[in-house]
Image (cartoon, rainbow, N blue to C red; front, side, top):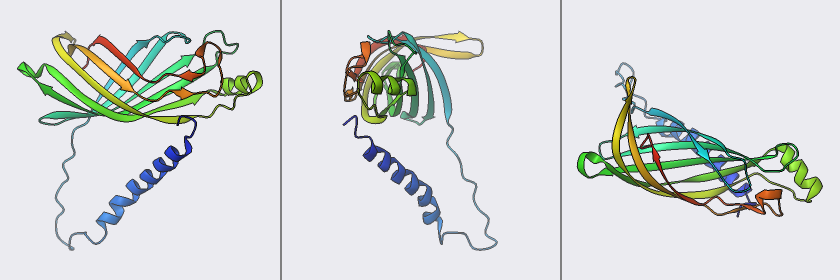
Length: 214
């Protein structure tokens, strides 16, 4: 599944084209009569949340993982679209050969309990796997592997609890404990890439303490 990325890319192009054409087609013939005043469209407020976290994975050098989330808060739940970039430099490579994993997720957060301290939810999305050119060249020359960038599907389940909150300047940050489960098929390389092995494991379950519910 990991190396057959073209169907995913073709599907993404079709969805993008339909999303661009859809509003234009839907609006055809629905313009108000001349002289009739248009009602203003009320846009939903979207918040942005930036973050960074330390990641550690066997076979790769430790590094930071930057993340950005776009959040819509609704009466009974929140919707978020999150992007996280994980630059993964393989140990013992001659020219800092690297794999970039870009994680894209759509999530829904639900709240419950006293003062809505408990939160839980799920998400769907994908893991985009990109090999830098130095790694592609090394794999071709030393392992006869033709590395191909690709996409694997991704599912997420999570639950957490707001323990407290702290104030930094004018901003208030919730202190939360949470457990996150990310489930995605392994991305197989087609051969061994040094200490990275023959595949990239994309599923993980982790528990941590953070300063953001989203």
